[in-house]
Amino acid sequence: MKNKQRQVYKSLMAVFWLNVILLLAVLSVLLFIKGIALSNSVSSNVVFEQYSIIVSLACIPISLKLFHSQYQKILPLEEDKFLEKYFITYITRLFILDAVAILNLAGLYLFDSRNAMYMTIIIIFALFFCYPSKKALDNRQDNENDLNKD
Image (cartoon, rainbow, N blue to C red; front, side):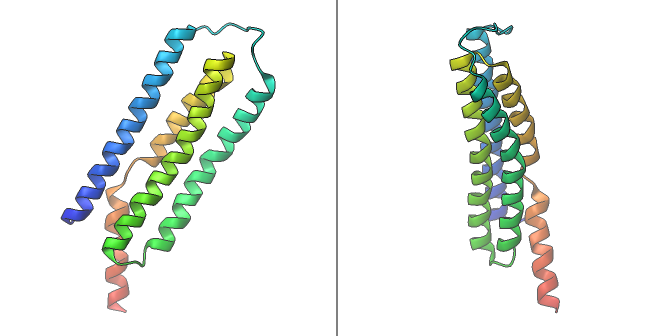
């Protein structure tokens, strides 16, 4: 792995772990403030819960598919351009999942929604499908070498 690839990989790892730790911290603080056993209060908003579940479950495969299709498009690019676009694509995938997690955290805070808490936990688990891969950067070099042989 080249120096520039290592630098991109380390940056992605830092962003990934910072993201996961921050989401877990915010969820923990909200659960501490609201109490672990959320009450079934009158402020519960059923419509919000329904849409947050739909949006959460839709955004997980959408973000993963978007990343995969963009990755396939940028594979033939030269190394510097590839690393730049790979980083942007990776951050976009995390941003989509973070936006949904923030929506659910807002629902947890505003409506004491248990479903929002569960969906936030599911989003955090889905983030582990976004773990940065050295193999993705190495495979690119293998594909580039195969193209040069032909």
